[in-house]
Every structure is written in C-alpha cells, then in structure tokens.
Image 1 (cartoon, rainbow, N blue to C red):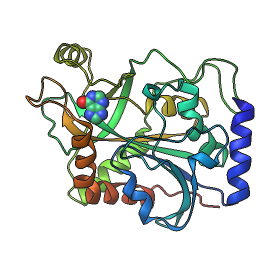
Image 2 (tube, rainbow, N blue to C red):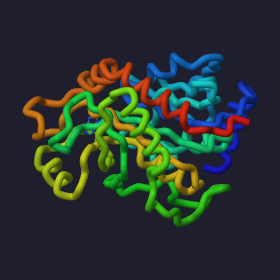
Image 3 (cartoon, rainbow, N blue to C red):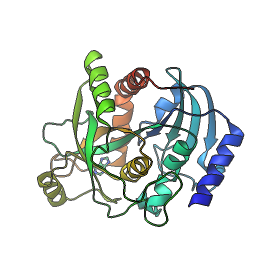
Image 4 (tube, protein in one colour):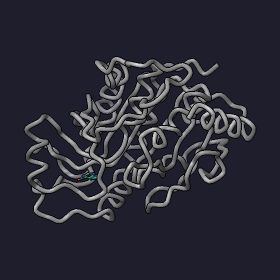
Length: 274
Ligand code: HPA
C-alpha cells in the first residue's frame, strides 16, 4: 500500500506541483462543486496508479486540484466504495493521497438515508460522530508513513470545524441538522427492521462510504469535517421504495445550499495556504 500511495502521489505531483491545503471528497450527486474550482487541473482516476476507474452514475471519477475561496484544494469528484469490491484500504487510497500531497484538513461529504425522524429529504447533516458497521478498517496491515497504529477516535469529526459549519449555516439561513452517521457495506439498501435496529443503536443517518477515509485522516491526525446530504428517508421511515436516481436527484436539488455551506467553511477555516 505504501508503494502504491507513493506512486500515486508522484504521478499527481508530476501533473500539478501545487500543495493543497484542504482535501474534499464529493459524494453521490454532489460532484458539481468541483465545477466551481478555478485554475483547476483535473486528473482522471484511470490515470493515477492504483486507482480503479469509478463507474457509478453520479460519480465522475477524477481528482481536481485548484482554488476554492482562495484556498488550494484537492477535490475528489467520485470515490471508491467497498460494495464495488474494493477493500477498505483501496477505498481510502485517494484520501491518503490527498493528505500526502499536503492537505492538512479533510472535508468528507456523502449521500445518506435519514433515520432520525425529525429529518426530511434534502436536509444537510453535520456529522457529529460515526458508527462503523462495515467491520472493516483501512488501517489493517502494516502501518503507513505518518500514521499511527491505534488512532484515537474520540473527536473523529473536529469540534472547531463543526462550530464553523454551524455558524456559516446560521448566517446563511441554511438548515443544518446534525447526528451520527452509520456506515454499512451495502449495496442493497436496508430493510425496515435493520433501520429500526440502527435507530435504537443511535444512528441518525446511514450510508455506504466515508468511514474508511475518516479513519485514515485520524491515523494522520488530520482534522475532519463531514457533511451528509439526506437524500431520502431510510427504509421504513419513508413509505416509498428507495432508488439511486432519487439519491442523485436530491444532490442536484441541494446544490446551491451545499456549495454555499462548503465555500463558507473553507473561507472561514483560516487556513495556512503557504
Ligand atoms: N441507505 C444507505 N445508503 C444510502 C441511503 C440509504 O437509505 N441513501 C443514500 N445512501
């Protein structure tokens, strides 16, 4: 994994030598934010060693390096999932690469189903904490350079960044709920019985991503901000069947609010963009 990571970093550096301050992972339906990057250089996942080509609708599958709010960002438009057959370390490779390029903050976003009964489809949820129901870790195996064997997960989602996100949302009158994200392997959506179980166990939202990337960030002591778009109410909470089309459509609808929130956070993070 270390060698694969080094090769990926080397390849990207050869294409663009800028050192990103912030890394951003855009979830299903949320990739449009990458189009707002200025002076962007895009590198297809297929051109990066060790990266399988991303293949699902709503995921473009490229890395974009460029400026957002005057900050050099590395942005993943699309990501890999365990349900595509990748292990957790392969899923986390792009996040590791962005941090190895220099990014000292990670912003993760995803599409999620709403379990908390006060949520409505279209809500943005600040991730306060997560529950890893995938039973997998990207840290399995040898310890990579700059990572720790047993990372503390007490503040997996950085309190200062969460405060900034809340302040930005309040100022811009963007409804921002918060809660615990439960990660499952997928790819089938859950049964109503599974959702009732997860509700009792303290989950507010559910999805099939994000946790591997957050774990590698914590192993590197990189602070994380996580935002879920509640694309649908989870099975049994909603009377309707779930579909991937619904998930992508919710992203399109939320585009303006989502973009304003992320831009506002990046503006106020007070990043050292040296
Ligand atoms: N369950 C799991 N993953 C999801 C969902 C859901 O309801 N919505 C979007 N991603």
